[in-house]
Structure formats: C-alpha cells, structure tokens
Image 1: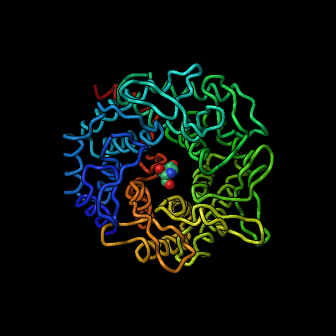
Image 2: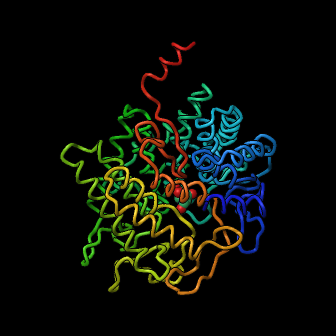
Image 3: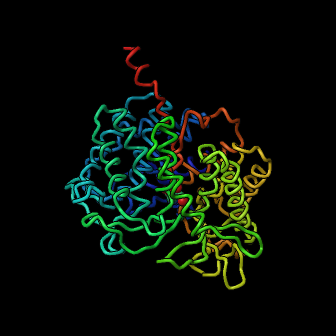
Length: 453
Ligand code: DMJ
C-alpha cells in the first residue's frame, strides 16, 4: 500500500518526469540526470514487479518503450545514471525477460563509455552524453574523480558485457581495479579522491559513508556475483575491511560501535546515515571471511545495526538524521542543524533486511516496523511521501521531494524484510547499490547457454 501511494501520486502529478514533489504536487527535476527523464519509473520497475503490481509494471514498461530516450543533449552524473537507470533496466530485464529493457540498458551503457576517455581510464564524474565530453565535480579535491562513483560501476558493467557479448564494458571496470592496485594506500585505506589524469590520490579523506561507501560494497558483491570466482575482488574487500576495522571503527563510552571518518590520519567521530549500509555489508560478507572471523563479521553487522537503530530512536520522529556524532558528550545524535534532515534514505532498513535474513533475530523486523510507523506518521502526505528537514522537531517541516530511491530501495527492502527468504534468495541474486537485483553469474552458465544452442 505504501508503494501504491507513492506510485499513484507520482503517476498523477509527475508522470514521465524524474521525481515527484508531493506537497506542491508537481514534478521535481534533479540535475543528476540532465534531461534524461523518468527516473522514478525506471527505478521502480523491479519493485513493482516483485510486489506483483502487474498493471503498474505494464504501464511503466510501456512508458519505457515509447518515451525513454537517451538521444538527448544532457550532462549527467555517470554514477547516478548507472546505478538507477542501467541497474533498474538490467533488473527489469532479468526479472521479466522483456527484451526492451536489455536493449535500453546496453544502449545507455554505450552512451556512458566516453566517460572513460581519460589518461588513466578512471572515468569522469560528469558526462555530456551527446558530445561525449566529460569533467569532474568542481568541488572535488584537485580535479579528482570520486571513489564511490568510479568504484560503483562494476556490477552493472559486467552484466552489460554478459548481455551484449561486448567485452568492452567489463574491460573498462577491470582497468579501474588495475589502477587502484598499482597505488600505495595510506594505512591500507582508500582515499575518496583520485585524479584521473595523474592517477594519484587527491586529499587523504577516507569514508565508508558518502564519497566512499559503495566502492567497498561492490568489491564484495563482485566476488559474490561471480559465483565466488573473482578472487581479486574478494582479496581487495577483506583487506579493506581489515584496514577499516583497525583505523576507523571505534566504540563509544556508552558501548555503541561506529565507523568514523578519517582525514589525513585524524578521526572525525561522525557517522553518516549512508554509512549505515555497512552493517548489512559486513554481515553479507561474513561467510567469505577467514573461518575464525565469520562470527566476528556478523557481530560487527549487528553492532552497526544497533547503533543506527539508536540514531533513529534518539530523535522525536524515530527517523534517523543525515549524520550523527560521537563527541562533545553526545552519542548517535546530530548536533549540527544541517545534519538533522531525513530524505527517505534506505540504508538503515537495508541493514535490518540483511541482518534479518542472516540471523532471523526478530528484533530486526520490529525495528523495521518502527520505521514503517514513523514513515506513515511523518513522511506520508496526501501527494506521496516527503523527506523531513529536522527529525528532532515535533512538527514536520517537509522538504517536498519523493526521492526515486524511496521506491527502488526503501520500500523494496521493507517488503523483503517481511517476506520469506526465497524471494530473491542471496545465493542467486546480489543487489546493486540502488537495490536493483542482479543475478549471480554461475560458473556453468556459459556452458548451459552453449548446451541450449
Ligand atoms: C542511493 O542512490 C544509493 O543507495 C546510493 O548508493 C547512495 N545514496 C542513495 C540512497 O541514500
């Protein structure tokens, strides 16, 4: 019903546009997608499919067939378009088998290729998909590309090669690894900034939240998606986690485990909402950890889940802030006004879903239900769902945006949290960072296809 409310209102007030403004009841355009349109439709396709909302899926598919157009003069974020559009189309294809989604995914993948035309092959952050000219965010350290952006293309690009028969996509992302493996890493950590021309790190800032997060997620998932044959991805993941544990993970005096940020060797005792995905990641990776560490990685996941739940529980609205701190006498609380907002993000619920699947401890469903109640009470409005400006206030000030990831991630992870484990089982599916499920490429898949021919 939550999905229906979000979808129906998007359809009523913003159909074909990127996102919905649920208070002003009109479309919302974000410059992340240039003038590519329909972000909510593409992001929501697989959620509609999984929830068996057949009519809605059909109308979404028809829109994609008739209107999704990449021949536009648009400067886009390579990362955002990849995780939401390429990822959304790939999942829709694998779930439904409808050829249109495969075709559109490959077409869009080809449009993204000029982003890799840099001296090192580390892609630009921004690309004009008509001219093929790329550049980086003007705010990024010394013209650098961002770790979480160029490090979050791997899963989708491996599938693009698999589905198109063209190795170029996989080659591009394998080269990113090669560049990273040639570089010295400070204390074994990966800085968030890398210059695509010189191939050198920018500022030595390290984060498992914004600017770093999904790079680590994709190392683990690349290994899982390869049916555990990508040994390089596996090694890079477990070595990175080791360095994160040593240098970034700390325990507060009140006993809460958190992941701090690292700035040139100094710790900032702050954890972002985005960082909360790491609980699920640690638990998902527990199985592949050295045998004496399996329980430890699950435990780490459980501790991060608990800390992130506290960040929700310590607000008036029971929804978590964008960032919370462990200094100046506070624990798991936002202290700065500009960190008190909640924009319908999924990461905490994502971690509950992984923890539930991997432990079946009922508290994760209880915590998920608390989030449902809070969303219904504070974010649901007549025209859809809106983010909140200050979760510590007793009165809602809505930000008037229904983010597309609310439909692709937050609602999907909630649905999975309350479903049986055999809906998208982990042995066969990995979720991209926008919660789009991609099938594990089993080692004998190639032979199977050969045999079928
Ligand atoms: C989503 O687009 C993805 O989850 C991404 O990895 C991080 N930010 C948003 C959700 O918060």
